Length: 399
Image (cartoon, rainbow, N blue to C red; front, side, top):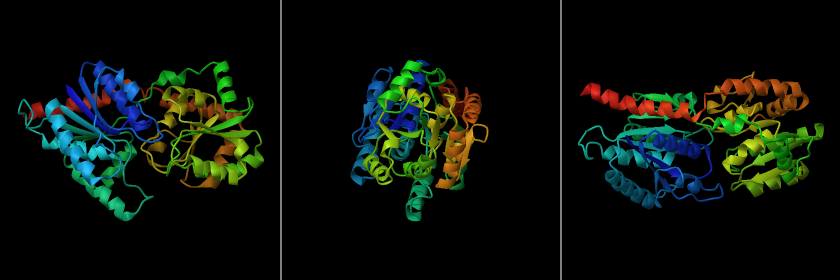
């Protein structure tokens, strides 16, 4: 098959890494793959260099930007339509909000107009990595996003989601209730996380970030951005730091709220207990997790955060807000699932893991066993490929 993937931007993030793994494996399986993306701007970092060595074509569309921009969006739509017409794909597979809207409209508009004159081509598939509507923004904005997604759903042949929770929330909002939905958990290169680095590497990482060798390290891996929940970790640290002098917090990531969060830490008198790594390349994330004792994830909205199974593959317990797909991997045998924004519960869960090394070890071992094999690239791409094949099979049965 000839498959065109469309994503808004290639920053360092879960949806982007997921999409790159999908493109890479599909290309290795003999499919002709093209990736269309907008420019990567901001402090999150770009993945272009990783893409260029993977053996498939990448097309940069400058007008495809994350922010709503009527002039650029109209231009991006027409350019997408022209590019897709030239590429003549069997499948148009979109990702993220902006590319998901424009890419699906452009792909659907070309049905029956491509070489081969099959009225069903190209098939339009969309992956929901996270929903644009959520409880932490205005009702008016939510209604707008839902209406746009409902319209785009009518121009979608099949949906993929990274968590069962995404499917349930989308259908509850009236998005694509008559369409086929399939969960394909976001892919992780398991070996990077299963095989711990050497003691020397962990010691060097801790030394690099001024973490005492005997410290208990709580790691949070996320962009320093709105709704990522760093403020709740800081609030919990105001209590935990007094009771647990050997505990340190490690923030992995960068973003527009970095200086604001550092100022909050300074005002709380906790500068000596927090470490910021800045943006780390994906290849160093396993080392950061292995050099820590457990992971906290306090994001208020997420499809299913890849960092949860990543930490679990490393044999680390996790503490997570109970949002979206988190409960599909976090349970009492693998960590603590707590109410969103509930700082006392966050303090309690962290204290249990700080005070009990045996509990940390047992939950970590359970966590590793529970996710092993579920998030492999082969598992994800097998599922995606089966969705493509089912669309063609259903077409042949109809004809």
